Length: 206
Image (cartoon, rainbow, N blue to C red; front, top):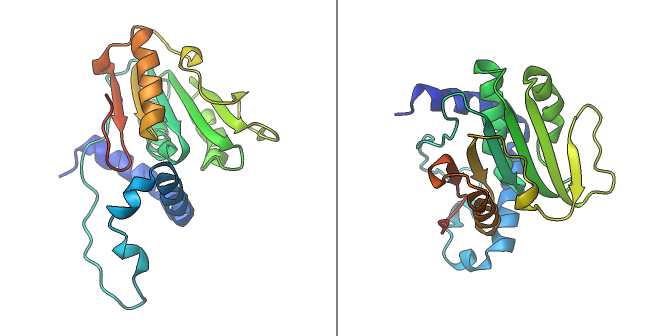
């Protein structure tokens, strides 16, 4: 059974999933297998090859993914398709705590590869204390009308991730990326218990 807060996050995610679900899923698998080719032999891909008319057994969403804390500043750090839960969290906060200080840090290959970025201007309108910092491997042509964001070229530098005192942190992305960012935040004094993370696929942070 989902908690009330988790149900609200799932509900807030639905419009983005309905509009971009196929692209999100396709990009996720593409990047996951590219980054972790060892999963090709163990990942259950039978459902990727089903034919029209076949029956699949499905389950509803379950589990708890929350690092929202109790009103403190929130830092959301994502890479690639790991942006999905961060955008859900922003939509939830826009509906429930619009004045809360939030920082979104996202890394991607380019502005064109940055999923859901067209939703950021509206979220910034609803979240006046939302700041955005973007890292693109290729930042050429990365500007998007309506987004107020700092854009840097290259890979994320954990030492330059904006960090408010007492912030709660939520990470989502490839395990090496999250390991790098988490290590940098720990060295900057963020307590481990204030850093939550979500892994898309097998793997744990160390």
